[in-house]
Picture 1 (cartoon, helix red, strand yellow):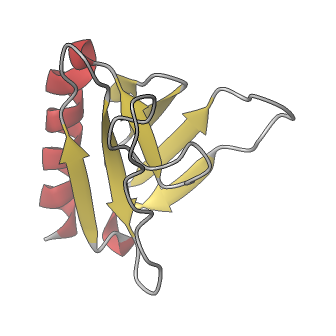
Picture 2: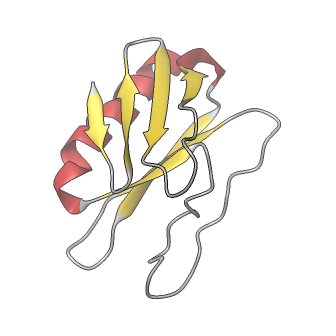
Length: 106
């Protein structure tokens, strides 16, 4: 199951979530998270004016807050390794991915 984001993708194979961001500078390594380790998910659908996001919460870490302003549109910063901005056309795929991760958590 894959979700195409604004600057990257999220893949989920039933056990592992892989967030691969398109590099702006050096080539960053993909972030892999085990679905069983996720303590929560945040999903904000994209609209015609602003991108949405998918964010995964882990134990012992605080969620990156939403940035304000016209360019950010209420999304976590690009540097947050556990989130990815998504366009409006990816809302359905992102919703299905979040539901699958939530089901695997329980």
